[in-house]
Amino acid sequence: MEKTTNLLIIGAGPYGLATAAYARHLGVDHVVVGMPMDFWKANMPKGMYLRSASDWHLDPLGLHTIEKFLEIQGLTAGDIEPLSLQFYLAYAQWFQEQKQISPLPVLVQRLDWVDGNDGRFRAAMANGETISAQHVVIAVGFKYFKHLPPELIERLPAGRYMHTCDLVDFRHFGREALPDLRRASKCIRMDRLAQRRR
Ligand SMILES: Cc1cc2nc3c(=O)[nH]c(=O)nc-3n(C[C@H](O)[C@H](O)[C@H](O)COP(=O)(O)OP(=O)(O)OC[C@H]3O[C@@H](n4cnc5c(N)ncnc54)[C@H](O)[C@@H]3O)c2cc1C
Image 1 (spheres, rainbow, N blue to C red):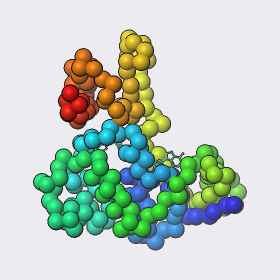
Image 2 (image 1 turned 90 degrees about the vertical axis):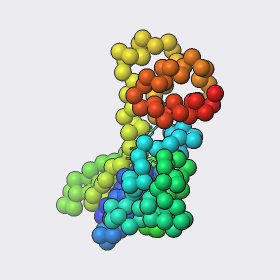
Image 3 (image 1 turned 30 degrees about the vertical axis):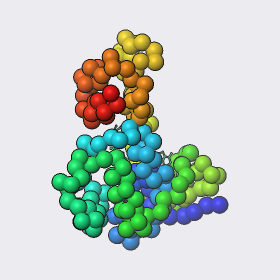
């Protein structure tokens, strides 16, 4: 079965959801595919705090902001910052509801440009369906682009390193791992988590 749309948005993370909200506002016919916020649900350490603050929201129109989400709960940024992962996921869920964004929870397996009089993209989905679209926005995040520099990992013992995309559980770290964590550039929040586990 083939669906047809003007704009196919591949990805239902922050960028895909924000693009969908804007497309809806402009009245652009669109379809969003992907698992809503799945990178945040599966690839971030439980109990993590965000680097970004309440002013980093999803709404290109500035209406359904984190500050608005707080306001309707009678809270202020000061009550909640630093933002927890759990809070941010609740905000993203609320944002989807407000903007009536319902992504199709299926992955694109292949994307082709089909030449012809009305050249279009054709996306083959994992469930066997296809979507034909005039325009495509790809917002699949950086999970596919993680890089472990060979010149670094060849110096490390096997099984003793992990990319931060995959590091979600700190329980297997012994105390001796913590000083190394502190030195790593993006691990300030992770270090806080690790300290809580001591
Ligand atoms: C530990 C850690 C902490 C971070 N902290 C912060 C922070 O505090 N603040 C911040 O701004 N950023 C933070 N980031 C970065 C943040 O994760 C990314 O900037 C953000 O998730 C990118 O959003 P995105 O929508 O591009 O992609 P993602 O959130 O990765 O979403 C990708 C979407 O694409 C979908 N998708 C993937 N493949 C397909 C496919 N083949 N077909 C259809 N859909 C597909 C997925 O299902 C998902 O819905 C952090 C990252 C890590 C690893």
